[in-house]
Amino acid sequence: MLEQIEKYFKNELSLSERKDFENQLATDSELAENTAFYLNANMAAKTLANEKRKAEFEVLRKELVNRPVRKIKPLSWAIGIAASILLVVGFWWINQTPKLNTEEFANTYIQEHFENLPVKMDANADSLQIGLRLFNEQKLKEAQRVFEAILHRKNNDSEATKYAGITALRLAEYDKAIIYFRALSKQTNLFSNPGKFYEAITLMKQQPANRKEVEKLLKEVIDNNLEGKNEAEKISK
Amino acid sequence: MIFFGRGALSDEAILKGIIGDGILQRTTENKLYEQYFYFIKDATFKHQLSEDEAASLYTDTILAFIENVKNKRFEGKSAIKTYLYQIFSNKCVDFIRKTTTNKMSVHDAQPIQDWLLAMPDESRNMLQKLISDNEINVLYERIKNLGEKCQQMITAWGDGFSDNEIAKELGYQTANVAKVSRLRCMDKLRELYRK
Image (cartoon, rainbow over the protein chains, first blue to last red):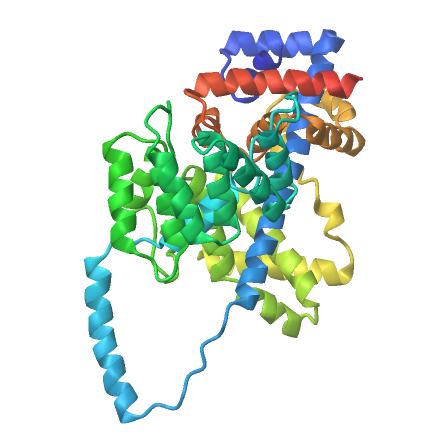
């Protein structure tokens, strides 16, 4: 029934089907209730989406407020000449490198994908699930301890390796994250392996960014059809 | 050209980005937020608002603009900066006059009104009686009780994402698979709602 209601609002019904729907709506209380449910649910979902977005903007605001402001010293001849040279070099550099802002991409990707990790609602409380729950509660250090303890027992556990890497990335422990993601990408028995793509995301966060290495990794992800290929293609265009 | 350097985004790039999919959309929105961030400081001087009040109104402005772009209500008759400033100023003035507050604008009924307007009078009147803030608030709480994946799907649907975009974002193989899963989630939501 919900599918039919959705088709009505998305204008996917023929003229006669539309007419039938409207006639039925006038007499069928169940259809009317379900239609109201559909509309109310859409509003509720929209409110939730807006709140989530507002919270993300608030995080961004704090970052912008705390961003250091450069102080401009009085100009002198020497600074003027140096600035001119920098301009020329900068112009050359811009033309030599892809016009992408990798750190912004990485920030958005992390915000979108690594804020909350999927937890099995009905699973027994195994260590991995405990780690994931701690992660989602933003208890990152505790989550890291759990994932690393799993790896201590079983050092080739791909899920624990992945989540240990993501947690290290969230904690800004980039060198550690890279070690985990490299270990993950070496595992050849996985159906889908995001190791290389996640390593690229981590490198985007490191300052100064190693653009060549990022580009190389993204190319590998695309060429080998690895997980993250769609995103890699977008940023590489 | 998908991503951009450190400079300001052109109006064209902003409009393309907002109707783009997934991460491009989010990055463009963040960049837009950053681009006119100084409006907040202006409002603290001009309207004597606190930084937090001005920031909240600015966020509402950006969200309203994004909504208007997605629903094709922004016609591009003025520059984005002018348009945003107009919305922001109106929100500041409204806020000062206390005719609206942030909390009152939580439920933006515009999309539903658009849908209802396309209906015959009889159906519209009947549905309007069944739509209420109270029901929306109950559903809002019920969505939070759904599993993680269902929450993500339903929130993305509420945010105006197509099934194709949801499939890409949440890792479903096709738009159709995402649609079936989303409708199942809505069935679950309905069950919770009726309890």
